Length: 109
View 1 (tube, rainbow, N blue to C red):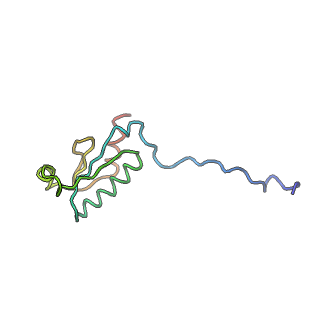
View 2: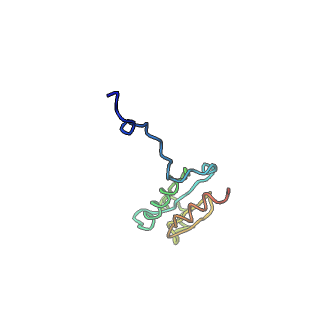
View 3: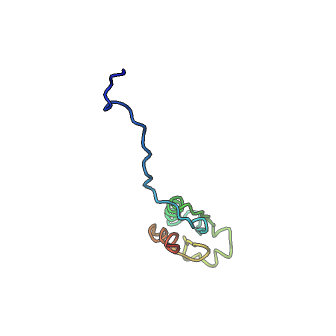
């Protein structure tokens, strides 16, 4: 159809800018540790927040079970879940998504 109006010609799709937060250039320098125990609903809630924020920022995280580590048990058993950022205690019991995100991004601004 050589006489087709330009209005109906297909244009190449333009890439859409990502709406997701971009990883911090220093995010790989962080490590988030979630100290938890099995059967703990607050721990499950905390893990969801940690997973979400770390995935968005490209920050690695690890989980540690206090039932498998006597030292962690003795240190944190009254506070779990506990979140450490770079080995320092960030929070316990409830994890605030914005506060965690801020801790992982603001120090390099």
